[in-house]
Image (cartoon, rainbow, N blue to C red):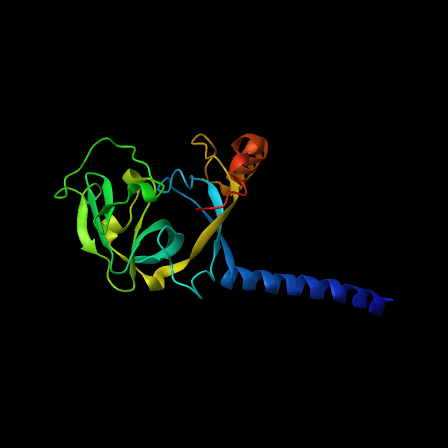
Length: 218
């Protein structure tokens, strides 16, 4: 009887093992989930959005202008960042009083964007509102956040090398509206765990941005 019991368990164990291996391979080489921790890509991506990134997107083709990409931060590769490609190698980028120009032509309307600060900083003070003109070097990209006045991007830390790009964002699979009054992790952590769990369960219907789930990212 024991032998029969073990033999019945083998197919289930094999199925679970195969599923785990396939899941790990998909996550490593094909698709991976990311959470948006900031407002730098509003209104395309909101803080609390959960998205899928296609990691094979650029194995067979090159990144293109207007792609929303996830990449390793060049100065700390353990940190992942998401921005929009505005220009590729050989193109001339310039920002004059918040207005974007690519190759000498007004380009602000080509890309989703918004400004939340009426102030215009001179180039001597900040690259946020006045930048360039600069030519994008070979094998590199100029990237910006859609929320122009609240984004750390190529204006601050420079052009992005191809090797840092991890994949292309393509779909929102969940979205949670953060609440500043929600319980936070603190000691003792076991108490915080149950407080956060209870809060999330109770507020799930209201904090979930149902209308954003399934949105294709452009």
